[in-house]
Amino acid sequence: MTRVSKQGVIGHFLDPESALAAAAKVRDSEWTHFDILTPFPIHGMDEALGVRRSWVPYATAGLAAIGIVLAQVLQNYVMVFDWPIVFGGKPFFSWPAFLPITFEAMVYWGAIGTAIIAIIAGKRDTVPQPPPMAIRTGATVDRFVLWISATDPKYNAERVMAFARSIGALDVHAVDATGGGDA
Image 1 (cartoon, rainbow, N blue to C red):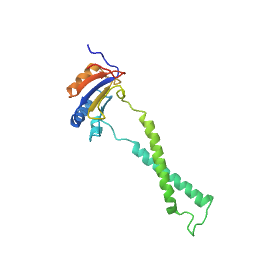
Image 2 (cartoon, one colour):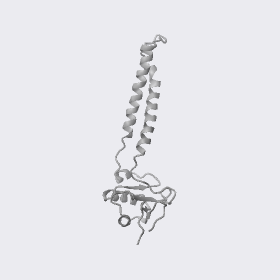
Image 3 (cartoon, rainbow, N blue to C red):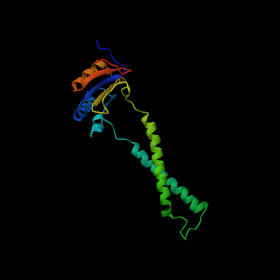
Image 4 (tube, rainbow, N blue to C red):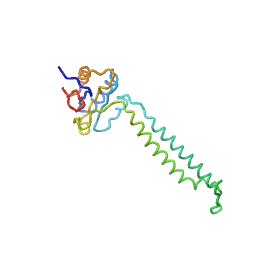
């Protein structure tokens, strides 16, 4: 009798094509808490995993627009209303002179805001990963690793291991919290 793991099931693939096909099969199956770990990006993997397009670029564009508006409002208030000074006969509202600061404010608000959003959004990861440093997956060197987490609502270690073997995964075994497991 195989000891059932409380952490998840791991299986390996040797080439990117089989990992891509496996990702699509797992996506279409009953499991939802899974991931494919790869040593390099694979074209089409996001679609195969069912990952939606990120909303972060739209937030970055909005934050950059806020930076533009704030820079223009501040510079126009100071140069036109609060402390108008004539520089070389130019008008008080000289928008070409405001462009460098406007660009810098756009970059600042976009970058800092995106970093804060990435930190907050990154905490919403729903798929726990294999225990780091406890197991050697080979995903950073030469293997493509299928990971199905025990947090999945329909998780059953024996069924998951049988499914992983049926889609061509090699060295399929359950992983517990310490990184050990049974094949």
